[in-house]
Image 1 (cartoon, helix red, strand yellow):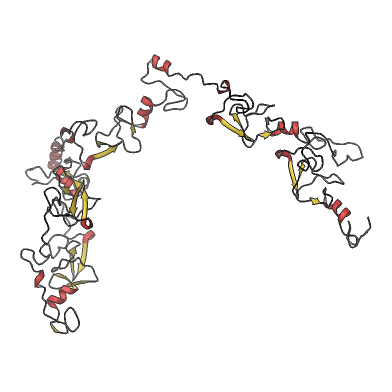
Image 2 (cartoon, helix red, strand yellow):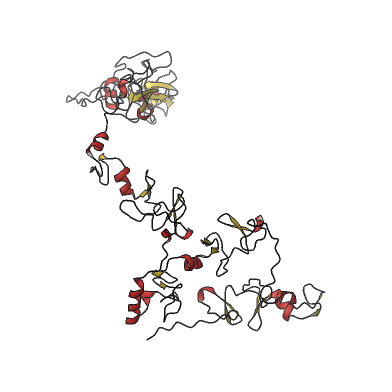
Length: 517
């Protein structure tokens, strides 16, 4: 059964078919969007200002002039006598649709609008490849469709076209190109039995049609002779065309890479000929383009740990002399570069550069020297502890060397008594001695210097963690049970209540007890 296209309503103004995507409805008729304008002044209309009369559209003003009441009290203004019939809009040769164009002031040769030759002022300027057009002249050279910066295409004849007309005139021809997906576009060919159009030119997909044997035979004959224009044959001036083929690059097929213009079909990897885009293209030092894989093989680092796979030894395209010359050299030992006294690494005395710098209390260390002085464990800013010997230690070694000593401290197992008598709870009052601090700067109880790793605070006083205990019962304290006494010492809650708490009935250790301690 032959294919019959669906019948569509005709536009009353131009007589062509109106499709659903562009239809405008008025007066029981369907109009094209471009034809939906006033028949006298050419103003574009919508549903709010449209008036229809005898299959013609008018704006409300023109409809009133032509068909509205005339006489005293009618017309443009109240109390105005208007006999205007709109004759000023009826120009010869315009079918009553548009007015005669106004004369433009001609500009000197090559300075005005390329289409009309008149002066182009800034308020109406439209640019295309450095040339200024009037907004009204910025139209397609074939279909006269209004253009903008999105759908404007520059042709090799220095004219401007819409995308469709540019493709018809300068685009590729043959099977797979045209207005419909998979259509055969042969506008420039004259084929018997098919006129000047290719099979599927109406926009219907080739795959959606039922083809007989004659159609398939013609298709196989035609596809073997593509009529696409080879733009690489149009050679450009030296240094101005496509870097690969040297041909002129037009806007419809232009791909940019580092300021150079390529044909879309030439924009491929030099080695594997893989088609490239802006994501995977890499510019090589030989002014050619590569995919990421070929670029890595040719220009990337070589040796163990590099190339496409982890741990893969990549030696493509390299001789033994090249591989020997690119073997990694022995790294420079920066500790051998001695620094001035007091300015280098505290451990080795070498110069410390920014790439390997580690900081500890204002001193700069090499990254490889920044380890514990005892166990040589590598350190970072979270693990390093500065000791009083101007060395750095890990937390465990710092605790062993400078931490509190005695029952309950250190890494020794807990002392458990098996006798009936309990072990004393308190610690030694002064279990160790250290460097004495200046008056008022050290620990309140022992007077020794207090470092950050063991500092405890109470009312702006500094204490060692081992000294931070009750003055009476020597119970270890924290921020929840700390009480500052008036004598500058610290107490637990019970001892503070005994020494400085209220006396009398109702106070004391037990409720209702009378304490006179």
